[in-house]
Image (tube, rainbow, N blue to C red):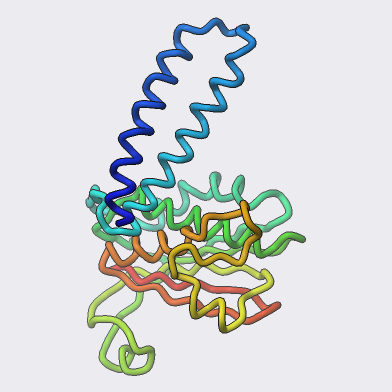
Length: 224
C-alpha cells in the first residue's frame, strides 16, 4: 500500500515541481509573489523526499547498486550532518583503518545517516555528543547464536551513537513500526525509523538498537 501511494503521489509532485520551476524561470526576481512560489516548490521537494522514503520502506524504490566505500561516503556527508544536528552537539567520527566496500545505493545510505542524525538531535535538546564510526564484522555461527540474527559472512559495520535521553523498553520494541512516534503532533511523521529499517533490509543487512533512559542510544548497522 505504501509503495502504491508513494508512486501515485510522486507523479503528482513531479507535475507541481515542474510547473513551479517553469513559473520561477518566468518570474522577475523582485516579484512580490516570488517568495510564495519558492516556498511552494521547496515544500513540494520535501514531500518528494518523503515519498522516496516511503518507497524505500516498502522496498519498491529502485536501488542504484554499485560499489560504495563507506568511510569515504560518511566523511563526505559529515558537513551535512553537522548542519542537521546543530552547533550545540559535538560530532565525532572514527573510521576502520582499511577500506569498507558494500554493494549499495549511496543516496539511500546518506538518507539513513540523515534520519539517524535527526533523531539524535531531537534526543539532545540541550546538546551532547553524536558519534559515527565504522568497523569490520565477521558474522559466524557463534555470533548468530549470541545475538539471534544474521547470516554468516563479512559485514561492514556502522555504529551511530548519541548521548541523549535514550529510550524505554516500550519505545525500543516499537521503534521500527510505521507511524510510531514519541514526538508531538505535527513534529514528525513516524516514518523516519521505518525508512531506515527498510533501506538496511533492502541492502540485505541488519540493524540493532541499544538504548537506556538518560544514557543514550546506539544503532549498529550491518551491511554485507
